Image (tube, rainbow, N blue to C red; front, top):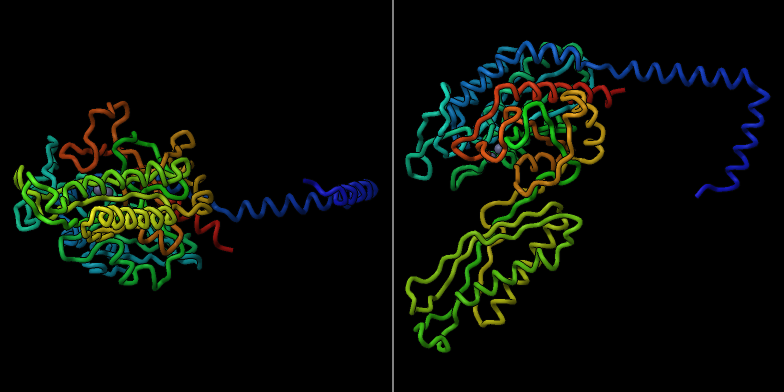
Length: 457
Ligand SMILES: [Zn+2]
Ligand SMILES: [Zn+2]
């Protein structure tokens, strides 16, 4: 509500200024001059970036084909890391290797002072056998968990690496214009390290990748099979879910299946636990604010129809979109599991998290707002759209937990393709259109320039 006193004062001032017309004109002129000057200070590099992205496009495609044909699993990205390090060194970027096992970090110091902007690409492939008929299809096999397994870049990380190599080359050519430092983070093991090893973004953060020089903001992208080439999608705040996994071990008392009253049936108790867990999302979570998921994906116990076993083991996954929801859902799970078992006289062990915890991938809201015009400039305003949160997860979240981050998606499927029949991520038919990478190259370069321009005085 407007304060009537202020309104009165405004009227008086306006009346006064009517008598001082030349003074009013002078103030207007000063204001216009100031705004012209400040606009001029924000230099737009998008045209030069587009030209350079066009020029480097084939090189990016060739790198991606090469990496696609030679995929490596998490913490084993030796060839990929060597290729990246060699390229960064060849264009005058300072390189650190073996950060977080096989990670590569490049530091490009611009000629002008300013913030430190990190760009991240993940490097690892998956234990999937490629079924695409391509000249550069993967035929690689390796040992995975003690078994020979086919390996394929079935998530698009080959594209992420090639894009960031291209971005590094463009930015190094424009070093004299850079108002700040760019830190290129090539990260291993986004899909998870092998059993018994640490890895991924978590380990890089632990080893200090965001320090020396201290990173101010971080940008990351993921190619998206369900979006067409040339499109960018984004969402402020929680864009991808935080994940926790859990293991529940219910211990009862064995008995003959014909006389259950002599025992405590862990199968019946497990069934109650599963049912009660489902009420956390349906009855406790404020679903109109944010979605959440509690899934039991495995249940193992017993081996005969007429024996009540001693114990049942269950594995599950939990997805939440805010830190508060994560804390709340985890607390409810602990309560439900403990008290359901107690009510039946069984004992229970809950391991939560069991082997995985990723935070929510959180897009800093003011950073997203600040950089949205840059995404729109890179892909065209009509090609950038807001999406709902995704209940999949991404370990970029470990970086964005420490410094403001923005993570977005770049369409990778050929225009006009039937989205119902294309190969999705993590499938043997996953395939990205070669034309998709240029949008990523442009977006990353423009984000660096625009962020530096907007945050340097
Ligand atoms: Zn993946
Ligand atoms: Zn991925």
